[in-house]
Length: 376
Image (cartoon, rainbow, N blue to C red; front, side, top):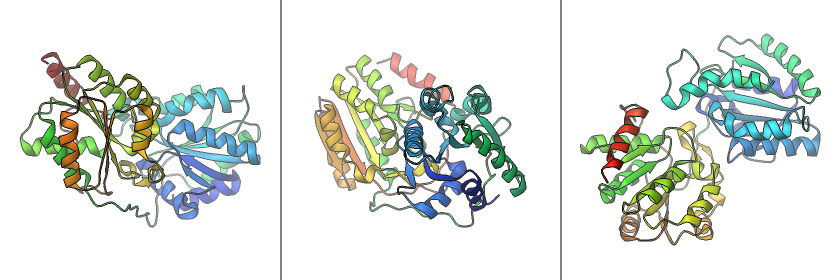
């Protein structure tokens, strides 16, 4: 089914007038269609996290009496669960909402390890929450969708929520959206510069392409992977992992390589970081103002000054780089720093078309990393 037909149908029958969410690669045809129609506006907000999107949906309903649509990858179900159960649910405020959920890790379909368990429980979790759900497959017809939406409309009128779980390839688009930003440095070149300075130091890297590129940089250089913990899932939590490691390994330099979307998703972690302020930790945010790994939709980072936020949270040294020369200078400063350090690096969108994925499993990565931890 074409994404445009899907959006037309839910707007006409379910009267969805507002969209909010966190993008997912499986939903790119859907979110690209929303971007084509509304951009980022009072009709569409790219949220910091899925719970944020649910709050926006509730506010829209309270202000207008109409129904909002919240989109997400199924990994975001956990972030959305609390505001659904304690805010939207029929037992609480009876606020209707339409969820559109990309089904990563669907049983029987090969996927990355961080998606497999979530994929197994995706549909059953919606059933447990008593949310009327329909799976959108490649075989979904317009007639079938209309029938489903008519049933969903009755649920929404009764103050209940509904959900579409979208299989891989179920939605199609005619033309995608090209996302850009004003920066020029490639992230992989930045990561290559970073590892010139880290040596045998610990690196905790965020989910997505940054970890994939770090893995390949090590491979090309013939370096070991034991220094690196690749956070293949749990977006937004790499800095918390790095903080706990730094507090336990006070004599070891710890570098956290983060992304702007990940930082925004759980920004409270920066306040916790600043309050504890380990002097052996450097928090690097590679900012391309986009959710690039899942398609390139913009984050709100273009209107955020991360360096001021870091300063306000209690980071002791603040650095910023927009060129590779500035990256090298900042890394020299951070390497000898003995206080909690924050570094923002602005990069362009884009990655190699042949960028691979780690050839080791998540558990192999963990075991190798923990073996190195035991020796330092």
